[in-house]
Length: 135
Length: 357
Image (cartoon, rainbow over all chains, first blue to last red; front, side):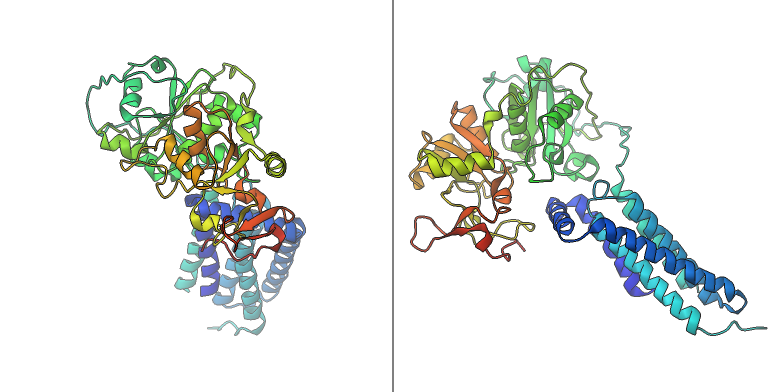
């Protein structure tokens, strides 16, 4: 994973942590939640993001299976990380809400962004990466 | 390769941590209670009137020591924002028998106004509180208004005997009374609350009440319990409120957070202090007064002062500046209304860059 992905996940954790610990942060998050709900069709965006992540991941996994004999260890690991991140992102997005986690509208996109970055990296890695070294 | 596996594991742990942070923690009150001082206490203090709100540490200890009428049926609430597990103050030590009260339990997210009567009645039942229970609230110190906010809610709901520990936990520890650690879980009551909630709806003025009175009633004074910078429109005072100003016609009643309503020892000032602040704006305790602040915490302090001194012509405008500035059409003032520089306009014309940084 890249530093940016890690930062996104760390950022998501930090937002959630301070939303629990600081009243000002919690109220700010509630205020922003209201703004987001008024400005964007969040349910639609949520569904689109879940579908996009799932479809891209499945397409890449299909490519991985097809090219299995030529996959390097590095590509396999990236694929595993991609799959894990996608599953975590989808489950998190579908199972939570602002009622469960006040900072949901902040955390969910951050995790999804990290998953998307991993998908893109994995895709680039699979289609442009080196061949498996044969002994 | 190893680094990638480790970073993947780290991310999974972080994500698990985020999810765990959001899930309600199942509190297990298995912590053993330890008192910071082993002592047998038998404090006797003078009885106080039912309508007296601000009480001394001696009086509260005398209740615990079963030397007051209130000792038969009382609940002590440590009032602060946040869940008990996230409240270091409660964890570090609380008054014996105190339950933690998260102020979010009495306020709803829409405007941070007091929750619906049904929600409050349910909450009271969960805490074992009926109208006959003496509720003793306390916060960190005398200027902290979390306990006042909860106390006001109790009175509004119909609890007949509500107290605030004057000077908060700071006064308690100065008085050298003991604290205990560990978690106390409230015991719900099956008894009915005993009266319709709210028993005193007249304690709260809605935004519509305030709008109408400002336009029609010259005896009505809307009193801002905010800092001078908030009153003058230099800042909203809050990181989540972008606009600054005051409802048109508001007068300044000084802030509570800066100790303007406290004596030097941190206890609550006399009602004459409020009288002095009102006089600055040509108002008095004879006017019909409605106190407000940002979201209804600070304003409960002058309300409670008036309440315990028998004044019936006072209310809390619960919505505060927060709710007022949500309606672009509402009239506002920016600046000192007594000066020629004061600008009178509407919320919609205010700039959006006044949130507290």
